[in-house]
Length: 139
Image (cartoon, rainbow, N blue to C red; front, side, top):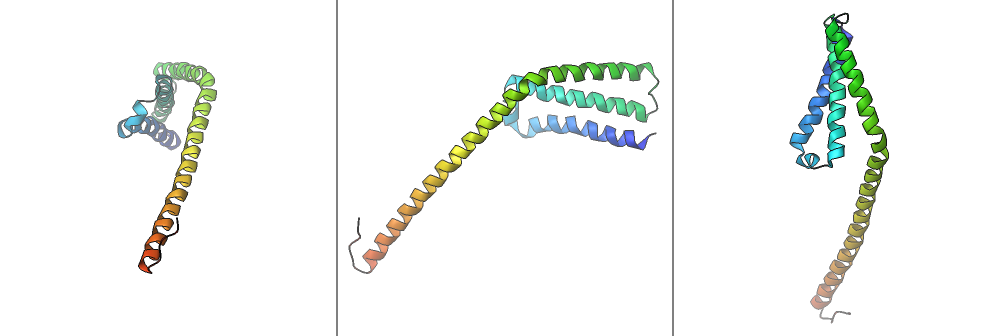
C-alpha cells in the first residue's frame, strides 16, 4: 500500500462529498442556474475519478485493465469538464462581479440609511432634551 496515494484518495473522495453535502445543507445552491449546477456536478465527478485512480494505485492495481479503464474514464470526464467550463468562466466571473456590485450598492444604501436614521434619532433626542428644559424644539 502506498501511503501517499491513500492520503490523496481520502482528500479526493472528501471533496465531492463536501460538494454534494453543500447542496443538502445550503438549499439555495440547488436553485442555482442549471449550467452552474451542471459544472458543480462535473467537477465533483472529475475529482471522484481522480481519487479512484489513486485508490487503485494504492491497492497496487496500477497494472490492471480496471486501472486503465478508470484512467480513460478520468481522461474523458476531465476533458469534458474543461471544455464545458472554458466558456463559462467569463460568465461566472461576470455574475460574481454583478453580485459584488449589488452588495456594494446595498452597503452604500444601508450606510446612507444609517446616516439618516442617526440624524433622526439625534433630532428626536434633541427635541426631547429641549422639552425637558422647557424650551420649544427648533425645526
